[in-house]
Length: 504
Image (tube, rainbow, N blue to C red; front, side, top):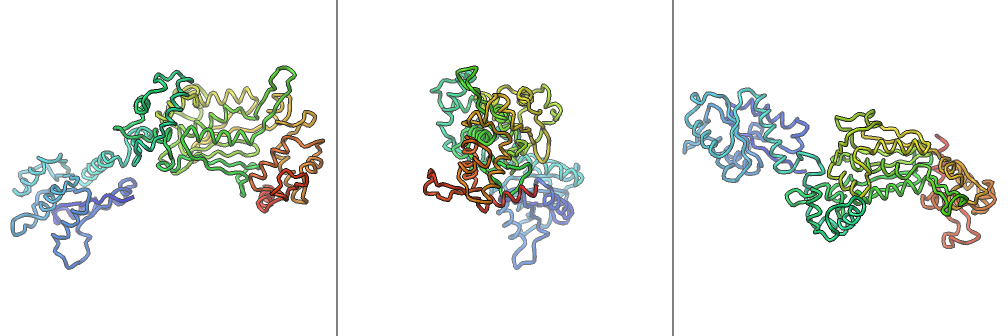
């Protein structure tokens, strides 16, 4: 990021100390040093140039002119004009951003020409007076922050409500807005009609800032949201053990709008946790149950993308372990909430209010301020431990897994598995398969027999597909995937994975 250069003017003899204090402050303040580069002529090295030419050239290359006007006027040239006045006049001519600070309260003691310069400056800009360096620094800090806000370099207000730099209306996807409109009308009775103008939809949702797309607009309906907000992606990882360990069996980075990110991340988790299908003994439709209710998984992920800090370089992380699901986001709680309050009824305090409303209108969020309570209640009803919430370099939601819960709930077995062959602890079954393939090449029928199954189960087929996708195993006949002679072998990645599990 290019810094804005500040030219600090003032009679050298009178303001040498003040300028040095100000320069050091601007170079060391954690916020201002990111955006500004101060210049004072005391630091110019010796050169074969006239001093006044150097000073004026620095004014030309600066974005901001700070004039310190005191009691002295300074040395005068052949026309009776001091360098301070020359610098102010050039800054005025070039339309530089001018900040004028007047030292002292007694104007009668000032040089007549300085009084006249102060009068001229007062007709053009608002001046501020100071007595001590601390006052000067305080006034300059406030003025520079205002400059950054006016230039929209820093935001004042919720991040999602501010203009997304470099984003234009063509960066929004009209079809995504239409899709939202249809969904919101069906789900919550959104008042605008299906054929409403795109601009009217954005205005109704408060997604424009002076006619320009806000961060919320880009995150919700952008063609390529990560082009403007790189860290808005979601990273999903699946570990067969209980700790982060390489190689990672399955890892995906999802990009897109918030709606797409949530859908992808939920699908990632649901495809890798246990699913049980019961019998039709009591109904025409067989009961189906996941080990973690899908609503709980969705709520945890939606909360992460809706309430995260989008100014952070971190991304939402969804990590599935053998014993738990962890959803981490770079954010924190509002000052009015505590971890304990999350477990009880509390008001809605969205960190990104303009993101929360469209998520609510499309039923990604059921009711404002009830997300954590709903998660707790659904886990209780499912026989799972209550979700855990903690602050650890961000906000973490942990949901404990119970692999056998889905099977107990329906009185059945994994999807497509014969009723006579119920399985338990599928995570550990996967490890057994890898250990068997470590020793010899085996086909599905051989694996099924060594696992004590009477026939090839649906879960075995699913595990083989997952291991092939994760490159932990490979086919001996890759060109004939359905051959009856097909066998499987452990890859180098699979061997490394098994070693990492043994260390745990």
